[in-house]
Amino acid sequence: MAEENTEQKPKKSGKMLGMVFAIINIAFMAGALFVVYSSTLGDKVNAVHNEELEKQMEEFYKTYEQGPVMYKMETFNANLYGLPQRMIRMDVTLEMLDAQGFEEVILKKAKTRDSMIRVMNSMRFDQIESVQGKLKLKNQIIASLNSVLENGVVKNVYFSDFVVQ
Image 1 (cartoon, helix red, strand yellow):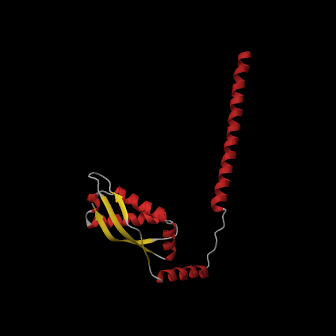
Image 2: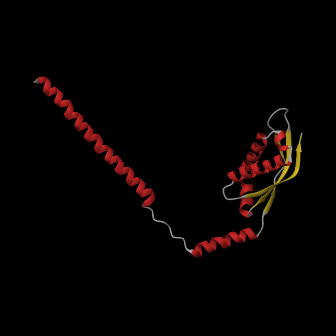
Image 3: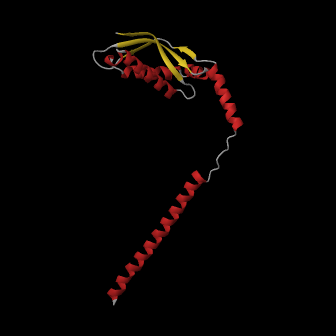
């Protein structure tokens, strides 16, 4: 009989332990559902009025009608990737969407120059010797500059001097 009593006790504690885990699991699920509801479905959507949208569109058109702003950067000298080692020298003019972008390029001059030099350092001579390669270089420079700038937008890049040695 002593053996029977010891066998029944683990069964009761096993059932009890299972019930405790089930209750904890349900509590965590309820907490997770509350967090999801409060962070997504529980938020109120801000109503946007047509007047506000029209004002924003008018401001955009005013800046767009002023025309692009050009910014001529200092001459770049950088090494190209690969062997034989070659150097590139180029003068770059940036076409910005508006004056706000122009100001941001001036304020972040070091970051913009650094991002452009990184792009040039990653290119090989055989990649940029053709016209398509130069267009690819322009597109990569535009993408890298737009990733550095927060508000400004670079529309185009113009090379006024482009020498590879």
